[in-house]
Length: 93
Image 1 (tube, rainbow, N blue to C red):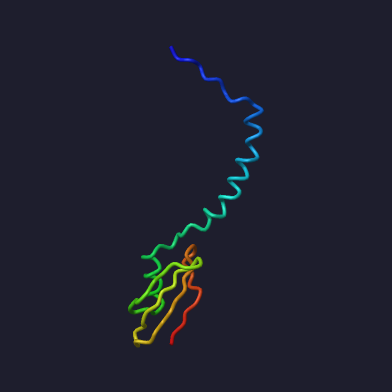
Image 2: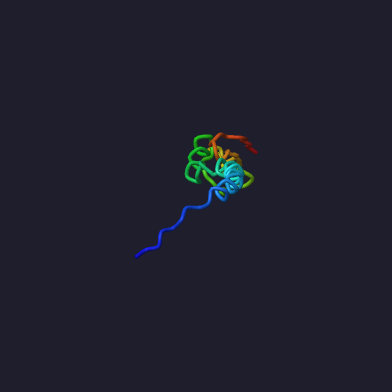
């Protein structure tokens, strides 16, 4: 025979509601910043924007930083937003 489990007291549930709401509000911005542009996407975007060969790629400060050379063998650096995939900066030297 199993012993019935009593539901949580209403007062306990009501006292936890603000805490749970605060947890959701704190976690939401972190979830919104989850990278949606992966490394393969960043490489494709970089190539579409003039990078012929990649020498370095890293995720730093919310952006992909891609370094390499363009078709003329000049150094090129492209910064790509990790959530939107938007090119933030292109620099050729």
